[in-house]
Length: 72
Image (tube, rainbow, N blue to C red; front, side):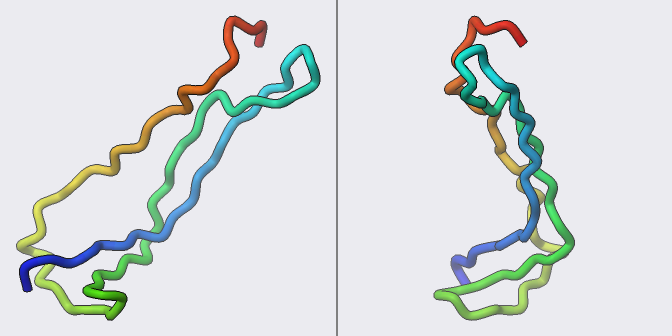
């Protein structure tokens, strides 16, 4: 098999603040990977020898749309 997708189910926890105009803005987020993982080809689950899989860290980024400077 030349190519497959690794799908990890998880959660996102976002922290919000209330701005002076009453709107709310996300100021940080944490991604929590769960234990449920599948590997698929064209939507079909496949079995992979995971001992040969090189670890790929999650590239999660913080929000970049923050309306600062704003007092927190």
